[in-house]
Image 1 (tube, rainbow, N blue to C red):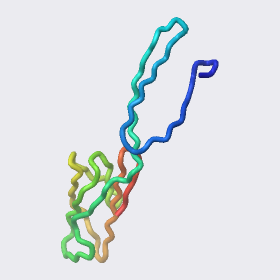
Image 2 (cartoon, rainbow, N blue to C red):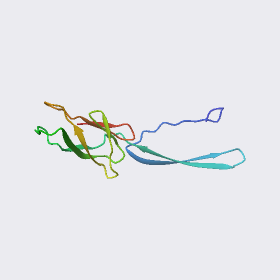
Image 3 (cartoon, rainbow, N blue to C red):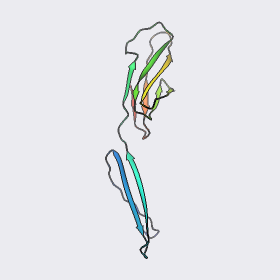
Image 4 (cartoon, one colour):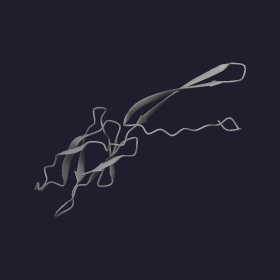
Length: 117
């Protein structure tokens, strides 16, 4: 602890939830306790496009895009934010233009890790 009463300590933690109990005591022996829980997440979310199948051909103006990702992830498909259900599933209709269309999806979890397909 420095003269201002602050301190720091660096620890390397693996992915997962970690709980720290911090106890401060003054010179009279009075104590104050604080519990801090930290979750480390360095893994990109799972992202699977189930529909449409790569190379699909259609004469319709829209296509159903569906799949799964990590619950709580933010999903964007071709720049459009798509709702993700509590179980991680998603489905929506994407407007198509004439000719070849590329579907690009990116899921970002609350920790900022991202996966793109």
